[in-house]
Image 1 (cartoon, each protein chain N blue to C red):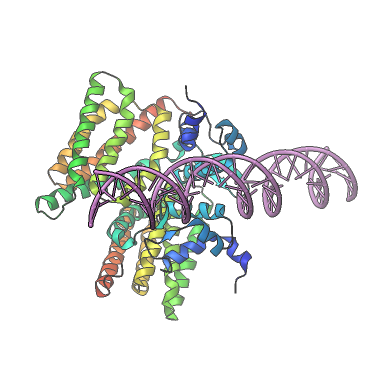
Image 2 (cartoon, chains in turn orange, yellow, cyan, green):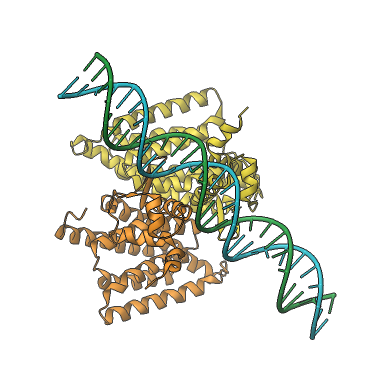
Length: 229
Length: 229
DNA sequence: GATTACAGTTTTGTATACAAATTACCTCTC
DNA sequence: GAGAGGTAATTTGTATACAAAACTGTAATC
């Protein structure tokens, strides 16, 4: 049971999960004083947290009019997946291209091996989780995998854009209780194989297909359980 | 001559232009108290402004360690142009697709006509500016054109991502004194023509080529005047 | 009865004051 | 002389207090 100091640690993360898990519904007014006493901090940290959440697209603010929980991300689902397709295809392509550069000795980044190992660890962890049928842990591993690939691309700009939409993506997945994890996992190995082979066009194509399948899976499960807005 | 109240109006914009124009060089420590007395406000608005600039990638902050002006965007130039290519191709494609939807009567968005007219106005204004050889005004018109196309796509998510990188893009252009404006302008009409014709693949292709040319122009002028980092 | 004007309340924006963490520098020791 | 430790000064993080703007409800007038 967390005491007040634990709560104080990162209020932003608290509000964030409260939004993503649905405790705070879209449209809810987020009054600073109310949040301040709820999380037992002053208004200043609340303000900063709200601004950060606004940057993540989970909260909307207008001057002198306060902040409200942003509309449900299901409205933007189509856009979010398309953004993922174009951005992550690009990162996969660049990651694969770097493999060729590295074998040619033109890319001395020491972090590459580190990230590459982390990816193997993530993939193995995912297999283990699937083996144990504890699918609920897959969402976070999935997210980590995609970010790790982005890191292989070596482009901080791409990573920061992906981080930008990751909040809404998480929210989306959380609402829909995505259960595609197990089927998606082999595709991850396929993506890494293309990257390792240095085949940039293939890597982009495989990644695009992977995200498209994720999108289709989302919309088909969404049509089974409609109107969660 | 602005008095203290004008300065107080939006400190963030002030700091932003000071960074973009080079008055504040990369790596400069941005001490809150110093900025506060310089712009004659308290530390709180400064803090909020710094957070906003951090989201734009113009400033970097670490806890208890303050904020510094971000590294020069020339490091990220390649990435930024590639991001523009993938994102703006997508927005152009979607804008063109909406034309077909609209003729089929499936898209009743009333703002479309408004934005479409604004684009014509921007294009005409650009022609006039070129006629008068006042090229320095083209940068802002160029930016407005690209955002207007993004608006035609109807996707707020894409727009917000483009806005996200627009700070660094502006910075980049400002550093390089891009002089490509006149040559780029006919290409803008080409893009709009493809969109108006509802040819989504063509619109994406033309937009991609346009941004690629912009990139090539940037790097060629950059090699003439190197080491402005 | 509807609408507009006004005042009271609520809520955010900003300033000042204090606490916590980091950085830098100085001293002491090996 | 170089390095480790500690203390002081600097700087950010947070709390409290006050000012400004927006919203709400009421009353008065057309």
